[in-house]
Length: 341
Image 1 (tube, helix red, strand yellow):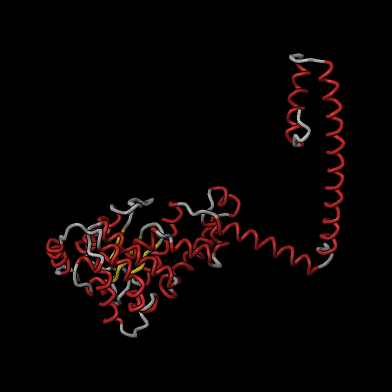
Image 2: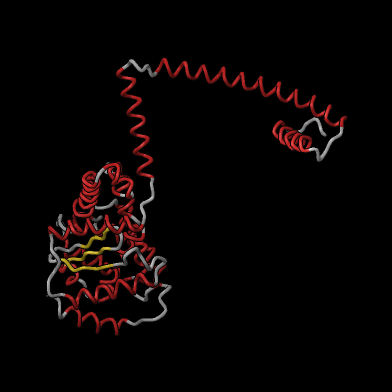
């Protein structure tokens, strides 16, 4: 055996030999005596190392005891604060399942619709919007969600559209009527689909102060059993309220909006739509929004900045469109727009 064999390797080898000796399957007096001497040396070294580790550990413990005196109110508060912060970070890092995304998103959609109801007598228009949505998602890398993608038309003349976790997309009647062709409408829907697929809403939840309430929302039956349904419902409401405020009032970050535009043109090209319609739609918004601080003007970067950001992506995506079916889409679009109320 070589003298430079590592300590761990020697321990493993000795342990193996010892087992064999004890079982009677291998025995040689000369080997036994030699190995016994080496084992004694290993034990001596291990004991010495253990003593040094214990000494250092005790010093660390002494320092901590002096710093965090249990009798000190300030130090106890500091200790509790560190523990709480650590727990919140762990909670925020937890994965949100597709099922949880769906129920959070459904709650947010319900809150939005309670303030701005769904447009009535527009089932044919909604069917058309959902057909466009399905054409987009079926050609994406995430064609299915926990309960699918759903588009609803809301009763508002403001130019606005929002999407929630789990596949809910709400588009205002005003925005639909502002579009000039199906490709522009596809740009709006693809942008919202991108928010969903890029999980911008769930990332917003994780980074917000409602992250601590999220643990109750995403908990299982055990959470309900220990905290009670009332506490879980309260936590769920906290998360839904926070996300609704983000979607309706503050909006996502500029980075998230630019990411959604860039992904949207890729989705459009994959579905056969003209990516340049994204720029056209932003031109429409720039003209109609003006300086208004409402709808998309309130929650999105300026159309001008979005056009500059997405320009390269449009050029790249344009090369991937193989066939022009705009004439067929034009007929569908006119038929749908003639029935909107």
